[in-house]
Length: 314
Image 1 (cartoon, rainbow, N blue to C red):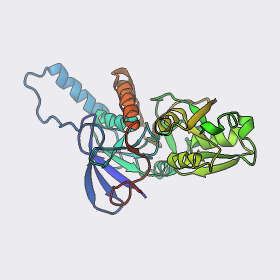
Image 2 (image 1 turned 180 degrees about the horizontal axis):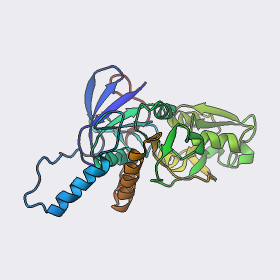
Image 3 (image 1 turned 180 degrees about the vertical axis):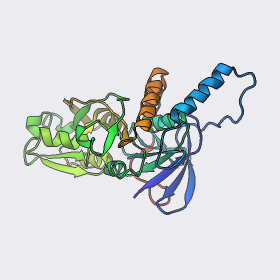
Image 4 (image 1 turned 90 degrees about the vertical axis):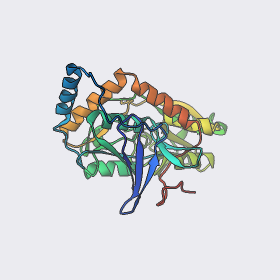
């Protein structure tokens, strides 16, 4: 199932409309506070500022996107604090996470509207492979194996990988040797770097591939999985809500960082995305996006796809 959210505002926070494939639209607001777009230019603006604005437009004039005037981004909203749903006081789910804030920042930087397509993680890869979207933002690691279906932006966030279990098993499943046995069940997300790590570090284990990180957490808590490979900050985010989880060891990984998947061969878009990333890091926006996302992730959240009416699936 695929969901689409169209961001209408040109500010760092956005209003979005939700559309099921082939269905009708209903407006929804992201967890960030929506700001009104300025419609007038202050009198007395200097010629230098006008010239700078014109240069910025010229820099992005050659960028082609799937839909003219729109930046279409695929994400898998089950990966807090990267992307997830924050549940508002009215009980409505709103897209949140620092990937989503960065997506809006990039769209604003390029002078484009933002449309978010929500799919499972392997769907993000498929959307990029078929060039149905411009970008994929789902905590992607720049894995060389994926370079045939997408290009990778510069790194915008550096994280790590962890082996996770529950506290009661922390002394039992805390090394690769301990979990690399046929009677030990180890979880990882389908199509992810964590799945590669599972196959590399525990090939003899009973490796269980699941579509969502939420599924992995549920199976760990239910005792159906003995351990799992999960991105470190994502695991810490879940640990805030489920303190029985335990991060027992760091998993070595030579590409510890997240990049944006860019539609293959779109060099102009790649250049614009990298410029936006550099600006977001330089002006402190990225740091704020991360802090805000971590705070939201510690509250009332939902991770996964919504139903056909845009509601949390029970």
